[in-house]
Length: 514
Image (tube, helix red, strand yellow):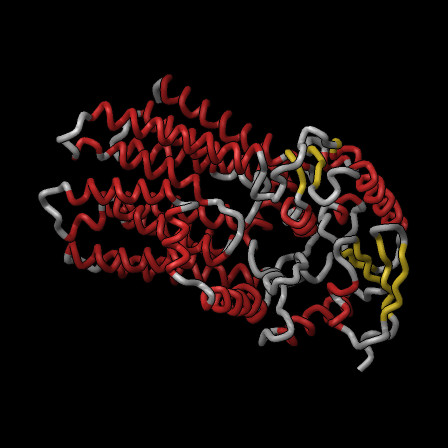
């Protein structure tokens, strides 16, 4: 490996790691910031997602994070090491992919550096949406390489990353799996050989079989997995899809996605400029990534989460840059300079919005310089800059109440569970019992609401976990309260008392009698 190549990789590593770690440590949106902290730690104590607590996504994220905690200890550094390392891996693979597409190493470094700035750092902490989209894009890189080199090995690698993406979050990985299938069929027709279809079918069966074996070995019920990870999320997707209209995407293209529209129009111009517009052009990288963009935007609109897809823009513009040689009527240098300037502007714009302002974590428009060190709350949180939107003017009160709650919970000797958005507390008090649900929201995503067909199944699951652990008390920490779980039991079997302004104790009194 040449010295210049080593230097480029070093620059990418420093940039992708430091940007993600710094901004991921800036501010707290509790339910998202700590989504995989306690749950990953509990895996190392023998508790597993699906089997021991209800979860509708993030299965793989939990497992990966548990390895980081196992190797580096249960702390904030190990938590962000996970996401920061994935950010680097993705930036590096983007760098190699753009070189593969014909860009110079210098140009590839520029675009992949922009990806490193925008990709994972909008969340910073491990998050299922980012894992799923990033792993899906890596899968597309492998698919393009497989077509270009007629490689069955890279078809397998592409499928492997799609499965890993799906185990992180079902969407957009499921949409990319459909895209993968269509492309493999079309490519097989194009080359008049069905070996790719046959190999893909064998590979997918092998991967599914491997997953089933792992579920059985770890005593994760296949029925539980299918309901929690496949069927229940489908009910959410159907409901959201029913409210989805393509007219919203057209409006969004003019507003939020205007730079994607610019990229699409540029690709369209490059395509129509070709004299030979044959079927094989469907397999060109820029056309493949048109579908990638459409899937990402459709998924973003359906999910209605904060936007995470802008890191695709440097990839798209890098691909456009690699294809400029096809445009002969306009000065190439002028086009390259324009693309670089546009891409630089885009990167700075979304860096400010999502990294500096922390919009994904809903921390925009607050003073993030006025923070308290996370180490004041827990030694596990050294490096975290604690500032929250809900309590930005009363940070000291919030921190003191959390510390008092932790102290009380450490002294609690009864079999209890803790329902809280501060999902680092279980690790801080070294508690071996975990809530039967990963997180608690009222939007029907974290558990089935009253009209959902899996409501009773969830209630039975929840009750059984409490019975198995002989749970006497349930503690809640505001903003979560008794409403998060009281529908599980019959009325008037819960005795609640206030411990402090945010911590409440709920004693279960004959709640399991038939």
